Length: 402
Ligand SMILES: Cc1ncc(COP(=O)(O)O)c(C=O)c1O
Image 1 (cartoon, protein in one colour):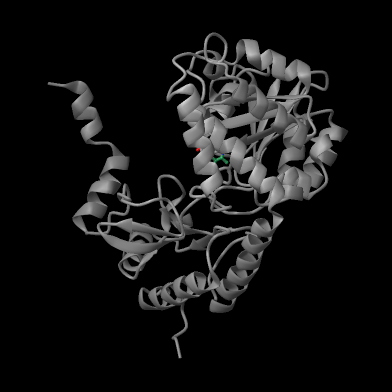
Image 2 (tube, protein in one colour):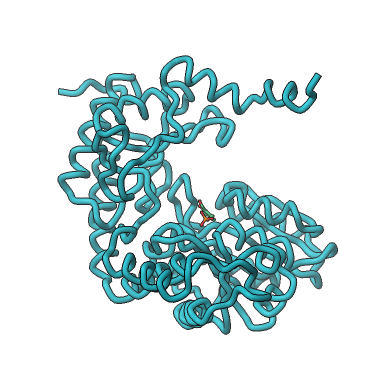
């Protein structure tokens, strides 16, 4: 008897997938045969992409592609070692310096993915006697990070400042208290209440780390993120960001005070024991960062689309939670119905992402609709019309279309 195979044959997560497949509504691992843009080709058919995190639509920008190609030509394809040893290029250092300046911090280091940043940072800053305070809807990579830490972990209710304060009151005043939040929450699209978090951090002498994966390129001056949106960058100790969303590449960074970044340089295991980011990915992120800084009209168009979509979804009567960003959750509150809507919209030429249990509570299932600066209003109108009709057909919207 193969115990491992037997145990995993009964995996509840795989069971959800199996059931969805048997009902013909399985929505995952759809194979894209084209470039990643506002329109993609799947099974030879063009569909509009409303499920991407490339908020600035830069994955096909000629300057970003040229930078990646030039880096391959000059440095080759792989680093074959970690930053610590043989894997540091001049372009890694250049990018880190640029990010530190942009965020107004002493220094920054880059990792090969955003996930590794959170894993490597949250796990190694605080000791057994210290505290990590985290929002219950923080990204999985933050959760994995603190699971690796020996510190005491205190969860607070989502964006609930009373709950955060209660947890802060439990902490020993002279121990480190690190509050870790997403700046923009990845599935719900709402923004962390940073003004209040900063106020509480001052009151209880706590430190703050903000994950700007979804704030970068979307909020703040030149797309600096949620902290800058509130004018609070100087008050936030550590700013984390990824290259995999607005910056059209892969990798991530952490920026902060010199002693903290130096500590990470010598102790953060995913930084030290993993090969450094490829030349192409590093150069692409650098080029995308330049475009983000120099072409504010992209961010403006993203917001024009966002304001319009938020208004239209509200007018339709869709339940969209507390979002105020290009990430728009359309709550369905039923696993199968969520899969069904994704399938029907896909048939109509609209790609959106399902978020179902066990990733969220079965009563909180949703469709994640996200915008890119390269979408046109015509594309958006097409998607909105299909969504309205589909929601009405499957009974998500209660009223009847005229
Ligand atoms: C909030 C947040 N943090 C971190 C990550 C990890 O980033 P990456 O995909 O660049 O590894 C993600 C990715 O989905 C995210 O949404």
